[in-house]
Length: 201
Image 1 (cartoon, one colour):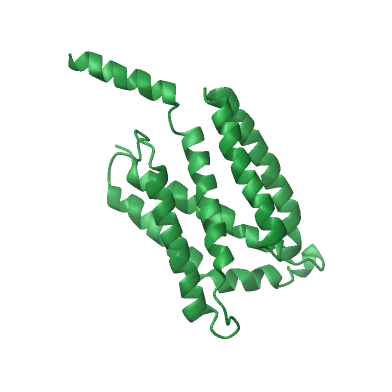
Image 2 (tube, one colour):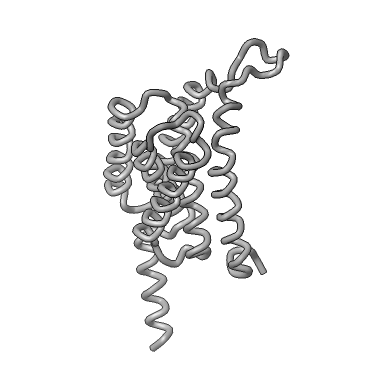
């Protein structure tokens, strides 16, 4: 008995707990990023580590894409969809973002998307791209609305629509990461469906 094929309520509770933590601790996390670390680290603020971390994450993403191209048969599809994602991230960086720390939305909502997939299809028998992106987008909008209405009332006087798009981008990356690693390839699914059809006869 594993968590994948039993206790679906636990999976949903994990998703809800993560989402609430991300939403409710947003301001505390933002303040932490701008506070100096203990003296043992010198005069360093966590926010100054964001750019080096982004370089590391970009390198890891390139390795992931190469891995997916080797493992799965739709190589040009992988290149195409990741190419669109990377192009959109570059455009966002150039025209919509003022601080690189905003990239934190990507891993936050990549994890939301991964948890949604885990909740909806723990055995990865189907591909719930549209449904996952829809609900991740809704959750991202609710997160930003909560920040605007409650968390950031003391200093935020506008709703940042750019964050809606960042959350969607993060969710899209999460979908491609999960289905690239844990999902079966199109060929594997066809073979499995063929075997089921054959055995049914």
